[in-house]
Length: 155
Image 1: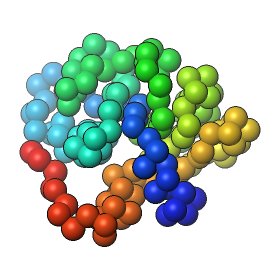
Image 2 (image 1 turned 90 degrees about the vertical axis):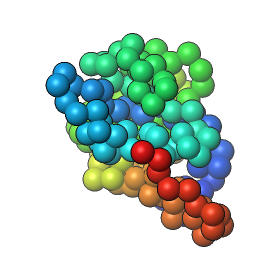
Image 3 (image 1 turned 60 degrees about the vertical axis):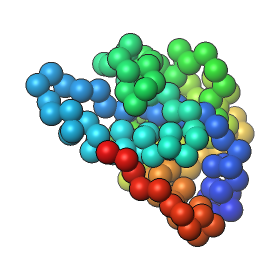
Image 4 (image 1 turned 90 degrees about the horizontal axis):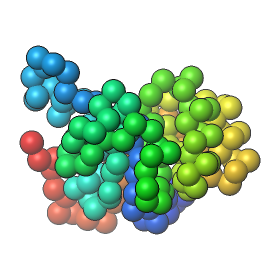
């Protein structure tokens, strides 16, 4: 997937279902939560106007970054453009099947993740497949040059 294709995905997407956003563990310092990769990426994408729906069965009903956590992407009641995955690669085929079922346009596996079966499921259903790329880093790389006034992540 080249930069132009990724740019089109980011420009034409509004809603991201983010699988693997962390909830606060009992006794955990809340500051740790802000540093967890999925949570940092979620907040960043929200800051740039995306609606990000956190998906985590262990945190269902909690609120993370102002959004209520859902159990599963199939529980989301609005159209989803990107299913962004922060889970082990071996879980990707099952997630790909659900992404197809909900009509997502893109299956995005975060940095370090790739799965051939998930890629085949996506391509067969005409869903764009992105793997081994961080959506936040791609956004920065593509849009930072065109937007010199680049806000930093808020604490």
